[in-house]
Length: 254
Image 1 (cartoon, one colour):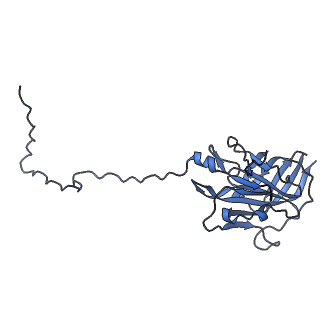
Image 2: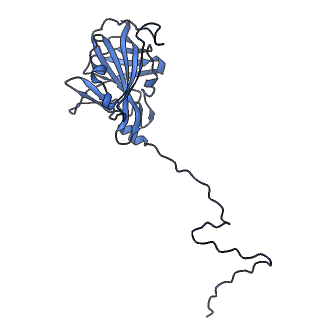
Image 3: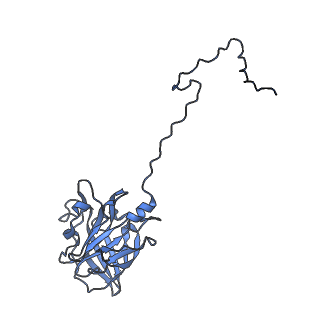
């Protein structure tokens, strides 16, 4: 049986020297350079954002709602507020408050600047003092804290909504685009529409969240709209809350 022999290299044409061996660890001068590919940075998955989109906590003793779990590193806050007087500070003049309405649950919220009309569902507290949120499967809903005043009633009414969900943007995605002087309309079960005027918009970090300022009774009918804001962290969710301050200025309907 014939043994296999190692094939010999073909002779190079006359006058063409063999290439010099390349030292180990150095790239060959004959090799084509590979194109540099930047590694793609991947942000938080939709599943994580779904879990940590909105977490609102309330205490039965003070009627306070804490939002979204997280805080800015310096515990600071950002504010957009109306001016103290007409023609000063570039903001709108203060609008007089309307007299309080009797209690009546809200059924719809309209925010013309955001082109939003949302059905309102009732929210309550569980045994851990946490306020439920609208269903993630219905991102266009908002929730009213039924344990507090109704919109238009004496005191501070609270309505919360998601910023985003697993399916994409939600009802309060652009809540931070509101300005002092903008109008909010809440339709109630008694067929009256409570019209509120925005006084200011704040973004509060967790460590600087002013419970009394946000939820305290100011002596007139007021409304707060809340959602998550700030940066998003995989472990703790959003770092801040966006809060809209508004007061009752007129009533339409029955």
